Amino acid sequence: MSQSLAQAAAPSSGNPVAHLHTPARPIIPLPTIDAALAARVAASVGLLRRAVSDYGRVVYANSLGAEAIVLTDLICTEVPAIDIVTIDTGRLPESTLTLLERLEQRYQRRIQVYYPRGRAIEGYVRQHGVNGFYNGLEQRLSCCQIRKIEPFRRAIQGYDAWVTGVRREQSAVRADSQPCAHDPHYGLIKVSPLLDWTETAVWTYILAKRLPYNSLHDAGYPSIGCAPCTRPVEPGQEHRAGRWWWEQADSRECGLHPRPRPAVSG
Ligand code: SF4
Image (cartoon, rainbow, N blue to C red; front, side, top):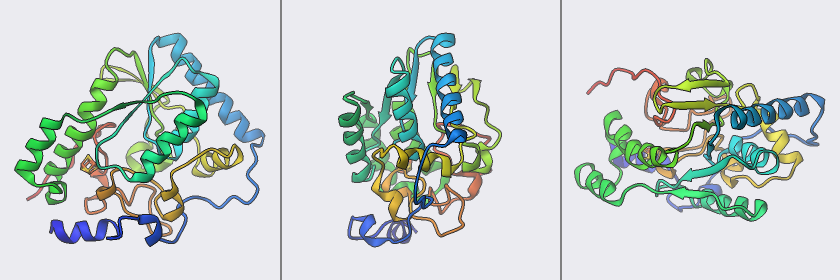
């Protein structure tokens, strides 16, 4: 099973961009920031500023996706008091790391990178194999725990609030999120300034401001995670349909935004 999933996950050339075709973003011929988008920007900046004044130490856990580009720009240009961190799981596409470097160059600011514990990865691979996440939900969640959640917990230590790029329209399980809410899972405030942004608004902002973005967005990937667990989507598919595509839709979260767990069978 793992072999066929791995083969379906990404092209064997190692260059997913060369393999694919359809841009996974809206085509916006003349992107401009109109009054409606400017109002969204102002509201998001206002929420970020309030987060700093109300909660104190605020950190942005940067996913390097499209929403992350908007948030990185807003934070670096408008609310620089917010720290920015990111998680390198060790399985990211090369284009994601290239993007990280481009963002650091553009904003002349270091984004602190957290890595998984080497011994935990060695133990996982010894038990489940290098691509063991394809073999069941428990194995997949265990890999996400080691490569994402544990480094994330270290990254947010000492902060009072964390910023996310979650948008309501991204998936059914994200639709009921709140802009600002106590996150009992991590014991700090979760701030989501882009909750009501549409995908078109995100891309209009990126293109109008000529911000760098992940080249995989032009090759069929609306949502980008680890290389072996992300594939392009077909036109009309849900935004996150390419993430852990072999699982049922209600389990397709890495655990950073916990939801009630589906029953695990088998
Ligand atoms: S997305 Fe895939 S490779 Fe990345 S941490 Fe989760 S299971 Fe592991």
